Every structure is written in structure tokens, then in C-alpha cells.
Length: 126
Image (cartoon, rainbow, N blue to C red; front, side):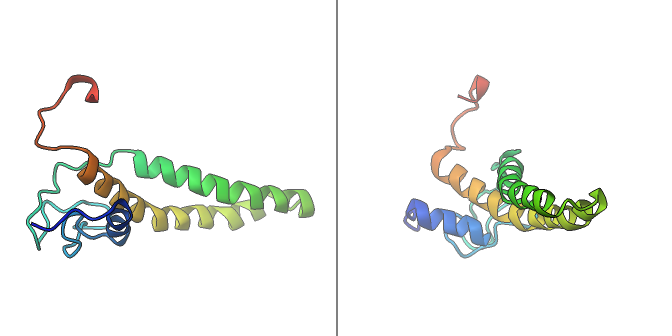
């Protein structure tokens, strides 16, 4: 069995959508569907559930990155509302599509490192 990589290496594997254990197999079976198991090392990936974490992180990242420029455009140019919709709507949708997969991969990689899936489920998630 391969040695567990450093935290940075693990996050990099998740960012690239690779298996957190071997770094070779694909982590995703679809755009956001985590594969059942790694095709290279047979790591069971089915139990890893990222939940809403990646979506929340993408919301915060996009919110911080878009609110400032949107406010600047509003204060300097004062365009009609439709201009904001045309400018920022596609940017939010595109940014979400770009960010969700890498953030989900990093979340699964962190779960691999810090969450023991062989432990029995504990009430309250503790």
C-alpha cells in the first residue's frame, strides 16, 4: 500500500480529481459523482460524502470575488439593473461550475485523511 502523502499532496490530488490514496485513479465517475471505487488501487470511495461543504465554499469564494467588482461598477457607472444581470449572472454560474468539482475533490481527500470510514457511525456525527 502506498504511503499517505502530505496534506498539500493530498489536497493537490483532490484538486486534480485523483484518488486520495494512490493519486492515479479517477475520483469522479461523472461531473460531480464520486466513483464507487478507485480503478487503480480499489479504494472504496462510495462512503465519502462531501455534503454541502463544497457548495458553501464556492458561495463564499464567489461572493467575495464578485460583490466587490459589482459594487465598484455600480458606484462608478451606475448602469441599469439588466447590465448587472448580464455581467454577473454568467460569471456566477461559470464560476460555480469551475469551482464545485475541485472543491468536492479536496473535501473527499480531507475525509480520506481525517475520517475513519471503518469506525461505526456515532450519534451526532462525533
